[in-house]
Length: 290
Image: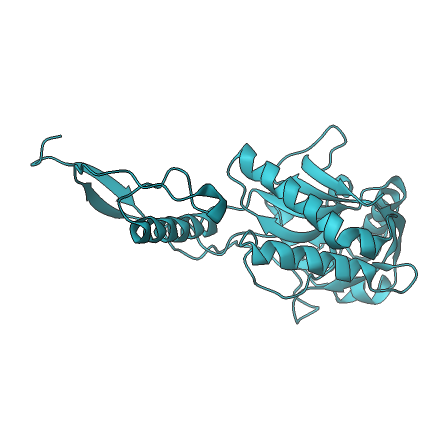
């Protein structure tokens, strides 16, 4: 290497010079959690390098668009048919309300409950996520579910923001048929596990169980989805232009609309902006309750 023209390495927008160093290699034992590729003369140097790499990876991951999400599928035939009935009746009775048209309704084949958003950058990370879900099943999902599907109902509607006259997201509520808290507890425990591992950014301590049925992001982009990372790679805040709708009549007339009952038997690792042969989000892995 030419000392006057050293190799430059760019990390997080900054340029670093790579100097030629001849040193004895020190490798810490893998079972203590250190990366096999980090070597150095002294243990403290290895630890410091590992920490800096972890920080850089965490920063990089937070700036990437979400690639996957943990979800329950809600696309059983009965629910899809009832959703289409809901759409039909809303358009018949409320289409004159500001901003209400067919373009903002969810695709019935993609109805789902989201537990949390993920950034998975390789097949290895997808496999690790599958393994984490399996550990969750063994540690608490089996106890909460009793080894059986969760029987739930999808009924009633609610909106996200504070003004029913300016709604961006309208969602259906989902709850256990027996009135228990099993679904909420299970979702919260899974969220807590992934947050503890740093795979889901901690924004909330509890999952808001909701199935989006109307979303104004769909008005301009039929493939749009409801959750985006807050910042771009260069640190700029992401603003999605959207035209709200007046949801007051919809909320009044369809407050208790019944979308159907279904059995939730799996948590899926769903891939964003993808579809399977049934028109639902493609699943990269799942854990079943029974």
